[in-house]
Image (cartoon, rainbow over the protein chains, first blue to last red):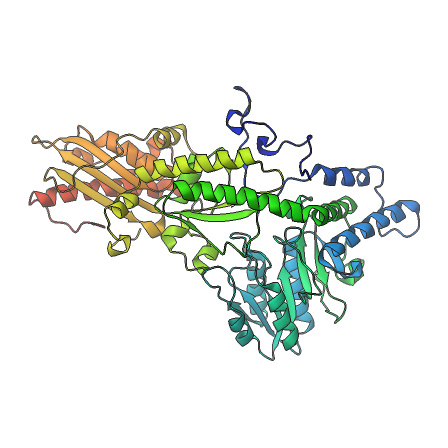
Length: 429
Length: 135
């Protein structure tokens, strides 16, 4: 099954030789290897959306005429497509502006509804900022939040989860797949524990929906946050699955006309809903084959790097991981310096050195990765339009840049002399 | 984001390498910290006339840190220790057009020169000063 359409040319992926991309006077576009940040829209998704901008522009909530009906039909079809990918009923899907809103609504909505009986939430230190920040706000409202640690492989310890649940716990929120290190949490086991304790289970599935098989019933998931632009759909649309049986109740964040069963007011953006639905339908059909192809590409890249560079460390579990993600620490070279040496690759650096804070990734720190190693990490994301030629080219560019920077690195030199860097008293600055 | 001069020094770094740190005519400065994402090693070789004959660097850090240290190896060569010690981080930052968030790279380069000079002087029984981050 072929994934890409000839009409699309992402990161010059469809050209045969990436090294000889673009002509002399054309600006070269870097190879895109940051699929956890966002994905290009699949042209098939765009095709499905286009009629709903100009011709079929109706308000899906208009009950009195054909314009409204055709828009409503499109939105309801999309809702079913989203539901079908996770084994849900379409009446359990609420459209939102994206996973950030879905996470805000799930956490705040549930916490506020049940606050008279329960006031405790359990989540994880490696969650996305939009979960952690929402939890911080709930703490300011008087809720209690437990932040579970993760093991060195990025996965939570189920016994620690069990111990964290109290009679006051209303909800456990654990992300399905981590956005930096791609590890898959044991959702089925977590769901089982939550159901056993009578606690709602929310999962931020922004990086999982459409990438790995998800079944809200088998996994006992009560709420699930979904994003459009991570699965080759449009930006600005997401969804929240809210279970009907047993029923989960929410206090809405956005008030108004009572759309989306009163959970989320506002006119639905028909083309975006259609785009999310189409992206979900494509993912349902192609997920298995795509995962296999991406795993091959990822393993090819990983083996090429590991066979030619010593002292490269994988962050996060390799087995329990989505196929399109690698997070590697290149010891003794600094991440931002490395990024500068691979400007023709679009990857993400694990540290945020461009900010004045010089803070390395909190996710890597939570795994127990040394601060100096966390500074040297790259997140490399592979996706639907990544080609084998791009993967090989990218690996070779990284190998070359790391070798050059290590030759220039005083830390590499010290390590080669057998000096333990921890034995040196570094001056703080 | 990076100036042409930073890119030039990053892509064609001058004087990368190491001098024998046990040579009495070599002063070594090692400043910064791996946990902060910046470490510079700057070495100077001083001739009998007190003039810096050679300079080498190795840097762990971003492009601006590499460029700052590469630049100062060029600047210190041919200078006396006093002249080299007078190099200011503001001169480095200005020459490389460093943005405000990268000023600390030029500060580190100035520190590296001073640390290398201190190390050389210590070997020659000169001014005693506690060296920063000596291996």
